[in-house]
Length: 192
Image 1: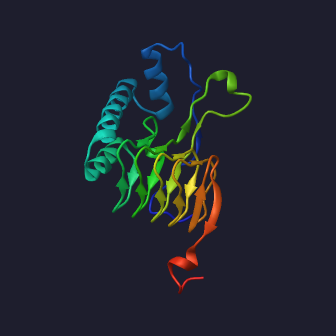
Image 2: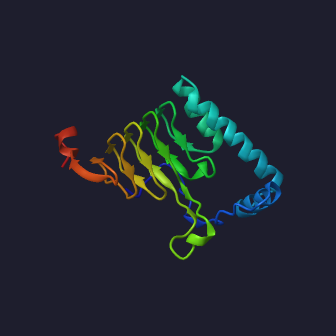
């Protein structure tokens, strides 16, 4: 499960959410945390927001894939992204979707956890890569949380919440998602 077609970014700490920030302070902090000019960061946020809205509703898969690539999502070949799919808007570059993947309507893939400062003693604010490996399928209305790897040819059943890695050739279901079965031998009799 460690091989991938992409160069995966490392998990990193991000600033805790500060509701009291002005727009200017938000742009400065966001730009600083990403190593970019605050003005360019603001333009990137606006571009990503507009692309997210358009990709959310467009009836054509090719356009949904293209717009998410323009946002910065790493997407392989022959990928299906259903309507109303939300791919992390703040850190799209931390999402990696390999070849032949299907993400069905209404799914959410979130790569970051941006908490209020008072949660600092409990959990770290962070961005962690999400990797959906070759041939995997994410069922309608499922949620994939930060740091998760969905294994090759795995199935995530409808309305599941995935907070831990999914092994290759595995069906998971539920909230939280749990392993239901393995099926590699059923897909190819020549493979153990």
